[in-house]
Image 1: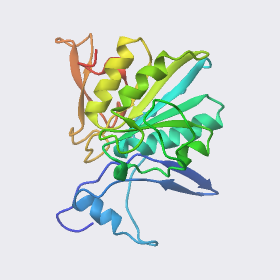
Image 2: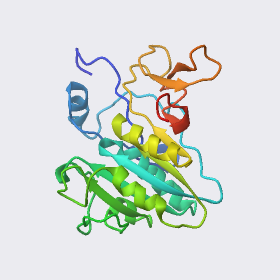
Image 3: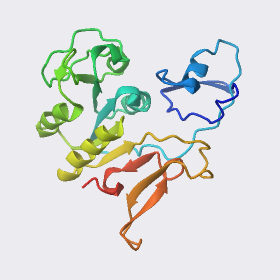
Image 4: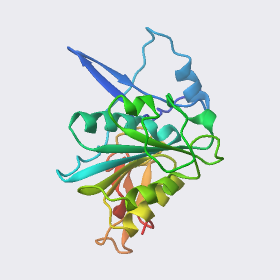
Length: 241
């Protein structure tokens, strides 16, 4: 990496294929600075140094739970891969994806999503695994006009066999809103947090997350996203109730 771009960038795995002793992984990102610009400029055959996988993953649903996947922006990769994995395991799964505007939707839309909270096979990346999706945009340019929580409320109110578990990844304000909704309704919810992780191994202490802890003097403490996370239960995040 060029001088001046010295720190590692954290990326979630968006897909995995094992081929004998070798593996292929998918990552997805948006060019926002020198680090992502450098990565975007790599060509086939270039060597890149990386470490991983790191941290704690999503937990598997209980046998009576069906999954509601929620992603926002570049929080899509781990949710996409999780959907593929759960579908292969026979877990009933649906997805909600939100973006600011249509041009920032990193999905292949096979039909135009309507301004209604209705799950349809509109996103190829999920539909190929039998997962119906709701698309939301903040400006109403595609799908449901609003935020992902505007789609979640009617989805959670609808009757379904078994219980629901929510898995989410995306911008922090979105995750906070999802946590409040899930906690208020007693729904288990796993959140993959987005933090800058300079080392990824708990050494630099740069990716702290405030979590509830009854054993701490003030009832909360800081946890490292790279080791205790990046996946946290929504009830552990201080200030999410």
